[in-house]
Length: 359
Image (cartoon, rainbow, N blue to C red):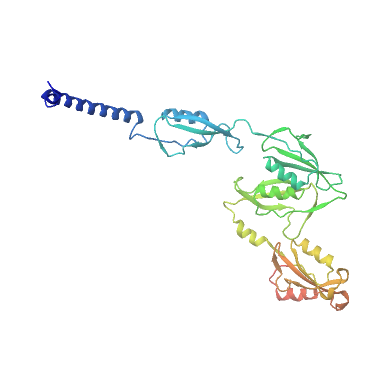
């Protein structure tokens, strides 16, 4: 039988049909097997593993026929050691069986950093370097030393901690600072309305320490400073270096700090008329205000000048926002009317006209 006759024969068409049927069966079986292997149409929702303990997370992963890999560990003192800090893919994503879930753990051992050398640095520089190394400022102590606020020694648990020593991240380092040549005092910073960390930073930068801390609400996390002692609302208070400032907190979730600050930030405008340059500067500083523009009429010298005008003026606006500027104009002492050394005589009249106001 020739090839031409063969392909026209019934036998050829039977074989061809069988081959086609076999091809379809093999193709169907292959696709079916692929569906079963890849779970086509069947996906698994990635669970939320964050903050779970490692053992709990692994159990959930195994129960879902997924795999896991511990990719990294981080130090976080605010989270439970050995818990899951992050995951990839994120919760809610759809994945196939056997997919790898990459986990980041919270380290069980605290991260350690190298203690820097702070000796002879200024307090401001030392605070900055400690923060950059993940360390915190502890107690500030002052000793007799020629360099004011220079670091004389760095201590941990009453002992000197040498540069290069490995120390746990977040450790409080006590600083021994110089007093300078005199028994120096520093103005107490105004920290009302600030968070605890912000207040601590401001107080430390002023070479002071935090004393008693009291939480007036149940919340001890989302808090800001409600009151401080010594108080500095009415005037600036000076403290010896290393002294303490007591802080009282209220919850910013329940207390209206915006209205509270608006109310307490108002201070009395000082009456500067007739004061010397030095006396005017001292009065402005003690009132927690700032010296603005100063005009000396006819080029009068500072030694021979007295204040004859100011802006704002007490009798026009007795209250001013803390930290605002006061502009001052001076005249020579001999240009003042001897009968009117100060406008204080106006104060009694002003009080009578405003009996309902508090002075």
